[in-house]
Image (cartoon, rainbow, N blue to C red; front, side, top):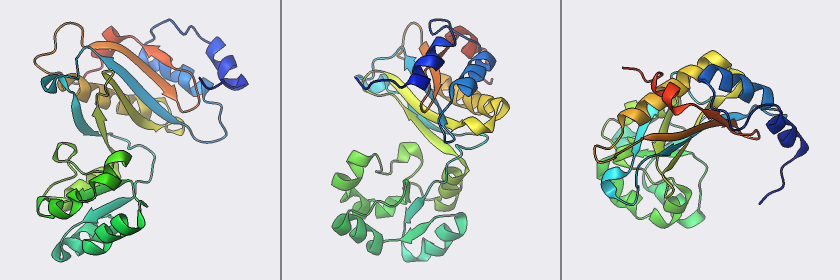
Length: 236
């Protein structure tokens, strides 16, 4: 286990790590304990009452955060020639077909954060699985990155679209913005994300769904949210 720094240890002593806070209080603590010399990302970590070993209990989806993530996302659009201009106009950083699939395959080029493509290009993109898969960069219809509406997909990614999905431990980890956003914007983003996760509850999931919720800055300690109070934040 990595040794924690002095600032982290001091921050952890500044609040009750076992208490479950309301969102406003939790964000106050996250703001005060973000002591790195860069603008830290605020992350949401949720343990769900599902068993992700079963396909019908896997939780996965996307949501466009109201205030974005604070990160400039580089988008590569792998499209046919007649869609290149549309993709670039929508905000793609790169757009094309074989020139980019060849570059990825032959040069291991990965100077992008998200690939958006159309169903008719998945034959080419699918051959890049060995390179893209381990990096979590393979486009997927469930995340909205394989679509015929290329322009809209690019605009959503650029606007702050994030994907949430359960890992093998039934945990969801999602970036929700930067500390510099302030409480109001972070609160809006967290409410939108928690709402999406709650509405994605599988019909086959039984018992308590939100088992634990923690928010933390990149270098700061985790602050617990009350799952019961978090349900009050869900937008109807």
